[in-house]
Length: 247
Ligand SMILES: Nc1ncnc2c1ncn2[C@@H]1O[C@H](COP(=O)(O)OP(=O)(O)OP(=O)(O)O)[C@@H](O)[C@H]1O
Image (cartoon, rainbow, N blue to C red; front, side, top):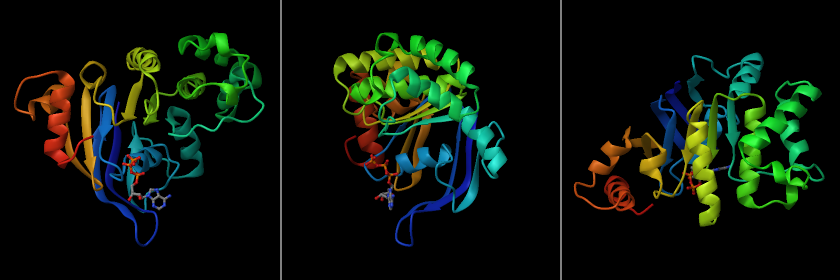
């Protein structure tokens, strides 16, 4: 399990350089990416998903780089991306939308339909399978996105701010899903929520101004706070120490 960025540079335009030579290797099955607004988290996720291409440098997943059309197709099959804003195809049901995700990644129609049923069970959305996908809640939409990734057996799932806007109950559902997923595949999540850090994620990466300020286990992250207290209190204190701001 290794997502590797080497001397990665990326700019949106002449004014906005987000990364200028980033080196980062993510091996852990469950990693959380923290950072203040504008740190580059979403950009890094989109690069890792091969939705954006580096200006310079390289990235790879298990040695595979999305550096040609053929490699990109293979890469995107293995690496799934759940962006902040999921835009369902209007008119499709949840089950159709999930099957569509599998079909887009090369499954036959029959295989995609079968896989969508299994994936919906895994994310606990069977009851909503026949609901129109644009009529479900934000948390359900994200689970639908994950189900899409499971249809084509992604090995790495990148989730950008998956808990933003979720109520406490939806966060609990999401949490157990991440726990379950990280037993069999690699998960990288960007978030502003430090509350379930210790229980859910084995590794923390803190990004600020396009650079890695910290990478290590959640215990090592908490110990930066240099005291005792609740896991969330320690995480908040460690974070504030690294970037001088609150999450
Ligand atoms: N499409 C774009 N065009 C130009 N600049 C962009 C674009 N998207 C992001 N940026 C800029 O790139 C930098 C990194 O943004 P990014 O969205 O990756 O940060 P982030 O850490 O995900 O922030 P947030 O926590 O607010 O989502 C910021 O300075 C942002 O203004």
